[in-house]
Image 1 (tube, one colour):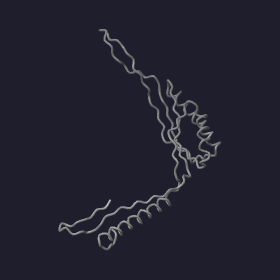
Image 2: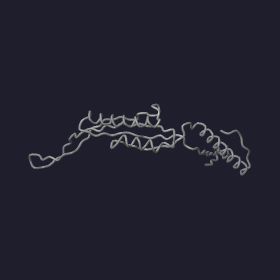
Image 3: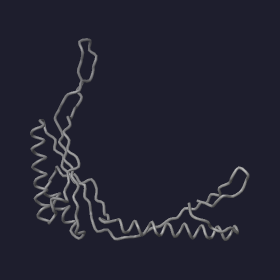
Length: 180
């Protein structure tokens, strides 16, 4: 936006501009949010099922050349599962009671896939290995080393702002001073 700054006397003290810079880059990394979720009557059974399934997935990821350093656990949780049952009181009225029916064990990780051509086969292999317990939340395509692209975008934004300021100065008959 453009803002003219005024003193109390009504004199102009400057023109404020903003610049926009964009850079388009090809992604070189896929980050997959993957996990398992097991439900069972006891914590031990659910935990064992989740651990087994996750281990099978890790074996498949290793077979696809995914380094251990590119796999990070993001969340591990054990939560109780409840249901409600209807009961009758001694006067014939009904009420609900919460009943523990089991536990859910969830284990989620992020997996970096550096060969984008391999993303589909990695997902397929992980899904097959994880079976019914597999959970794939999302896939994000990104640039691993984004610093140089951000620097180019910032430079472009500064250039855009300077060009706007020069145009406004010419249109209003003022000269540009030092940027603030």
